[in-house]
Amino acid sequence: MAGTDVESLLRDLAPQVLGAVVRRYGNFDIAEDATQEALLAAAAQWRPDRVPDNPKGWLITVAARRLTDLLRSEQARRRRENTVARWELPKEQVDGPGSSADTDDTLILIFMCCHPAMSPPSPVALTLRAVGGLTTAEVARAFLVSEEAMTRRITRAKQQIRDSGISFRLPPPAERSERLTAVLHVLYLILTEGYAATSGPSLHRIELSSEAIRLTRMVHRLLPDDSEVAGLLALMLLTDARRPARATVNGELVPIADQDRTLCDAARIAEGLALITKALPRGPTGPYQLQAAIAAVHDEAPSAAETDWRQIKALYVRLLQLSDNPIVALNHVVAVAMADGPAAGLRQLETIADDKQLTKDHRLYAVRAHLLEMSGDLNAAREAYRAAARMATNLPQQRYLNRRASELDDTDPS
Image (cartoon, rainbow, N blue to C red; front, top):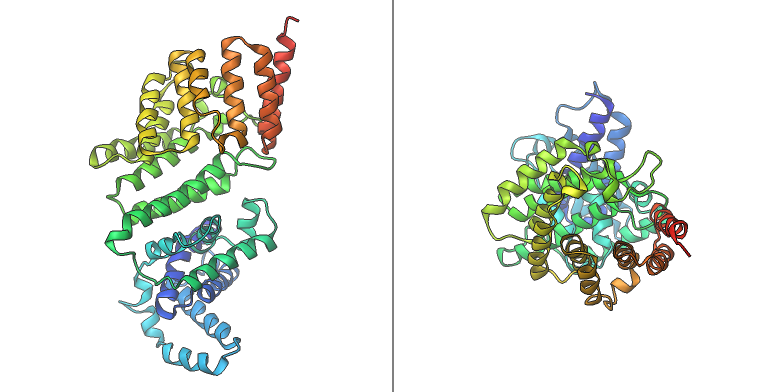
């Protein structure tokens, strides 16, 4: 087993181990700390040729022992020690058939981390740490914040779970659909931040995109018949497949019209197309399936000029019927402009231009700039590009928008 395979094994086992420990002992916040310490111990001790025969059982045993130590350090030491003593199980029960080591509680854990009682952005951070197996430092680096700030965020999330009295079980059938929607939204947020970082020096945060795909694969494995789960996984694969074409080797943004489609990940496109093709006829069509269908139209086009924008426009109309998301409405504007011309796009843009969420987002001004440029109004386009650049917090996006404004300066006949 290669060293990277040990790391992958630990990432895969992290939610299963935490789920088993929480199921047996309760107390999510201390169980999560104990599990993290067990993972760190394994990372330090395991070697490619020295992985235990039952790695999950090993991790559960170490986490249980560490949890005992953590509980003993609490002020109510004697009472908790007595409780722990009653909890202690013989080792054969930890590692043997029918034990927690044979049970995968990952789905319950994901539902818990994404509980609607938690305030954003806590579910994202907690999901990456508890389900993804990332350390606090790794999550902090992914979101460009200090480890201390991320520690506080994760601590608050665990306190919210404790204070809300969330039980470790699957939500009842009446709540399951709504709760799954919350889970998928958290995974989608991780993907979007990875694919188009909101701030910082890089256009992409590949570690977040990769983790979003890995976690969604996990949910798809646990819920293989859910069409929206399959749709989200397809959307992620089809979106991430275009990442190599979206930036230069120096990390600069490449507009869609100039992207080299041969750089896209053909294997991910094929997998995403197969997933969405199978999911669409299976049941009610949800927003992730529609977004995946839009991504599929983009990915199947040999070039930007050959994109079927009329089909994309129709899909956005359907998506808008399911979602009032202003970014969906903005993307619909682009589709209208590409299908029916920039004048039609600008008219459509005016219908959403006063949306309070969009007026704070550089993408509104970038779309306006692009449509004005397409229509030949270069002076107005230049000013819109500059406005978009001032609002953008991602450096490659800022540079691209400023560059477009400068290029229009060079073409201004006045």
